[in-house]
Length: 223
Image (tube, rainbow, N blue to C red; front, side, top):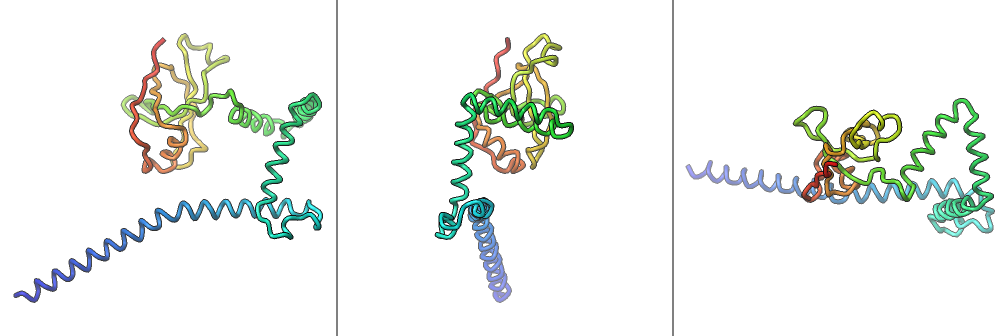
């Protein structure tokens, strides 16, 4: 009678060890995969930029022949910085206005150019408040809460339609935060969270798996 008992204990010990090794294996993937993929994508991007910039440099001064990786990326950063510095002057501003006028007269290109320029001006402007606050709102109905990002105060013709202060809230889709819904909500109905925008985006992309440390939400005061 003791034989089956020992066999059962051995089987359970074997199953327990296998489950533990499997858990360790997946834990190793969870730890190493994000780091490895990040470094791989970064290395691929540096290689792509170097391959694009290398033909533009004469061979005697080409750092690619010296075995220095990443020099093309440094050149891109330096070039963009120099262009930004030049556009700050009178000649640069004149060139920008001229290019805006030319692009604005092209039938198909002007729509794309205007949209892209507005997005970059909103995101990169130092005084912009877009995507600076993570909020909770009741959507799509009362009692159901979703994560959103305040993109600014509602103004213009839409803002004039309301007697109370309104805010623009972007509600992203999961797990792709580049698409979503634009909502106009009363400021008093928006609950601002303490988490950063980066943590909010991580939570959306991970479908709620990556949850930041709890922080007490602060309700926006009613006017």
